[in-house]
Each structure stands twice: as structure tokens, then as C-alpha cells.
Amino acid sequence: MGFYDIFNGDADGLCALQQLRLDAPREATLVTGAKRDIALLDRIEPVSGDQITVLDVSMRTNAGGLRRALEAGARVQWFDHHEAGDVPDHPALAAHLDFTAGTCTSLIADRYLAGRFRAWAVAGAFGDNLAESALASAATIGLDARSIALVKRVGECLNYNAYGDRVEELMFHPAELYRRLRPFASPIDFAGRDDAILALERSRREDLGRALAIEYSVASTSAAAVILPDAPWSRRVSGTLANHLATEYPQRATAVLTPSRGAYTVSLRAPRARPDGAERIARDFGGGGRAAAAGIDGLPESEVPRLLAAFRAAFT
Image: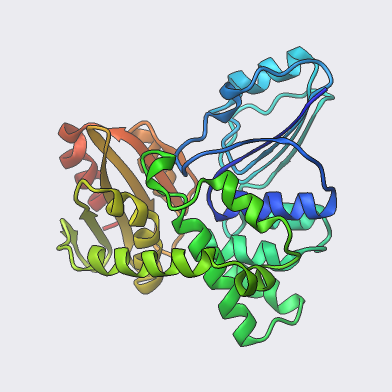
């Protein structure tokens, strides 16, 4: 019998796992990667009796891996907020899924644990660009303005670390970053006693400054798109840039296109004032996600004009 913790390498996946393991510590094989590495169940060969926890990755994308795990006799616990497709009705699957706007996997884990480690859920929500939900949760545990700012900083830096074509482009492998989180009961303690946040924050600030200097490819009061250069720094900052623009311009949809392995990775954000439509556009181009935030991997360069036209039309 083996234990597997399988999680998205972004802030939401990290903070969800941190809550679960603070509640129920165990040594497990960690399966994770960069933000877009989501077909993670294909990396394991489960056998009868294995216990598998999956956090913040699409059940639809991992449908085959999930089926194999259940058929092998493994028990699976799944926490996620992305569109799941057909959820198997199986006694060995415990699915904690919530697709409503304003939630994320860290908040789902927080609900499951009755708020025992809520500061980590707040960090995960801030990292997932859900400021309103993060602030509402922070209010229930009495965090003051200084503490909220620190938790927000942790969430944003953890999220920044997840973006890249491969883990070698990240500042920290997500599994290593999780191991650095493990000793700390709250993100405030982590920020005060581990220098990872200082390194991430410095790099994030530099990369964002370069990205904000690039001219938009689509620019209107309702939609804006930017195409970043082909460089590791632009891949690292793509999610941060998309979240920054969505926050600064809540009435406007955002698209960030980043060269990746001969094609483009696309981050889509619906207007925060009307958080709907991002997933529909992504799905039309082979991607997925949520109504408020979605993504596309491997978009051919020849499809970029059609995507920009569809994006402009959808949000005008």
C-alpha cells in the first residue's frame, strides 16, 4: 500500500495540500509540476490499497488515470473547482468538487476541515486571484490589515512560482516548495522564517515590470490582450500579469499569450465585474478552466488571429 499526494504546483494546490497534511500528517509520494502540468495521474501506477489524494487538477483531464486507479483497487480523495466532466459513481472515490464562481481548491479544503488552518486557505485564494473570497475568509479569523497583506504576498508569490514550460524554468520545484511550507502552521510564520518568499517576490516584481512595458495587441475598454516574448521570464510572469491586469481593470477581460514550445500558452480572465465566458473561449480552442479564468495550451501561431478575434467579440 502506498500514499500519493497529487497536486497542481500553484498556490491553490500547495495551500490545499498544506491544510490537509497539517490536519493529517503522512509521508507520501509527491506528484506535481508546473502550472500547466495537469495530467498527473498518468505518472503513477496505482495498486490495490493505495491511497491517492488529488488537489486542484481537472478530473476531466485525468479521467483515464482516475479510472485505472479505481479499477486497480486504490482509494481516491479529490478536491477541485475546475469543470470535471462525468464524475464516476464509485465507493472508493470521495469527490469534493465545487464549480461556483469565487471558490478554489484551498477554500474547498478549508470547508472540509471546518476552517482549522484557514490562513492557508486565505493565501491560496489570494494566489488564485479571488481577493473578495480571501478577504471574507480572513475576516472570520480576525486577521488585521498587516497580516492580510502578508498572507496575500505569500499566496501571490507561491502562484508566481508555478508558471513555466517546465519545472527547470521555475525558481523552486513545487514539491520542494511544499516541503518548505510543511513545518509552518500559518503562511505568516512561513513568510517570517523562510527566505523563499523574498527571492520569489524580488523576481516577480522584476518580471512584472518588464511585462507591463509591452504594448497591447488588443486594447479597448472591455478587452485587452498582450503577447509576451519567447523567454523564461515571460512564461514565469504570465499568470501574475493576467491576474494583475484583471484586478487593475475589473470591467475588462484579459488575455495573455506566451510563446511555449513552438506554440502559445494562453491565460484568459473574464472581467471581474462579470466573471463569465473565459472557459467557453478556452474550450473552443482546446483548452479549459473556469468561467472566470481559463487557459489554452499549445495554441498554434496560425490560430492566434482567430483567438484574438473571438476574444474581442466575446467581451465587446
